[in-house]
Length: 310
Length: 135
Image 1: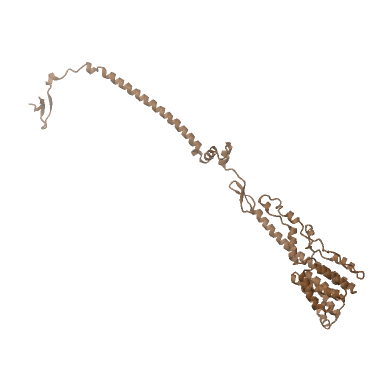
Image 2: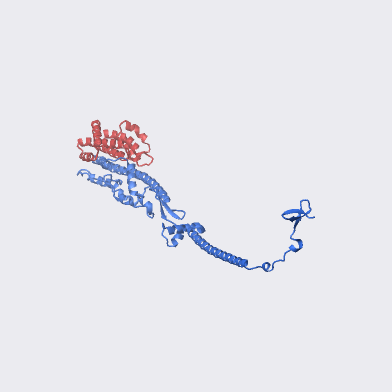
């Protein structure tokens, strides 16, 4: 025989029992009430298609996957009851406005009983009820399998969504993808070293000081601050050089003045040669200028003319 | 009553009009629906042939059996056409029996008519016309 599959307690409201709009009218002559009672007890639990679905499904939808916040909040939780109701209706096939099979299934054996075949009617009705129970059980197992497939499908999708929505690290940022929209959002921005350096000085992002600090961290000795310091130092050195140059120039100027002054003083002072002029050599040579002529002969200057020395 | 070890052994008797054989075969098909290996709709449709024959010549009990089997068949069937067919035939039978003065059937027909769609009732009228002389 088929194994009886116990229904989860949460699904039980889907089977409110057989909907009888009104009891079958009892006849004094017939044992109908007995049959009816028996039939009602043995009738399988059939979900009422007249009743509107319980609002539990709407309450559960949108509750979100427990334990996962953020983008997954928009993913509706698995509505087991609603899904089961849907599957159950699909498995059962189209139904009439109310369960006419119950009527027909009662009227038949009731007529049998009224005809005098009470034993046969009882046996028949119980067998029919059993067959119906078995059939419903079969349907219910099919429905449960279908529900399991749907649940597997859902959990696969939920797992995929959860996997997709897991935060991951990009650089120093924690980033999350919203599986419903495909958009990424930064959960945590891990500051870069230069940002930490700039923020540590209490500077506000966007200000020129902050930007300079960022550049300082990256460019190190070429950064704006280092460049400014270099410029200041260079200016200082240039100033020193300029003043030193002035000093030197002044020294040179004063030295030159001193030299000029000395030269002027020297010029005004008679030299030893001036005070002691040479006696002259005119007495000895008569002031004759001699030289060597073109032919190697000795010549002398007489009245502006070179004449050979005799 | 109950599951037959060899339903074919009853065929000859049933074919020659043995009411008990027809009943046994009809009951056999009902019993067969309890077994997982059998398709309940097919088993009932085959059994209904014998049940209808029994009802045609038998007592009100046999007609009641047909009604019950129709109910079971419609319940087990998953397609709307079979369900409609079973229900229409059942309503037609109950209606004919009500015409014959069966109070139970009359009450049943009233309730069934209330709960059935117009197309089923249309089909039931056709059934009633062709079944009128049988039951």
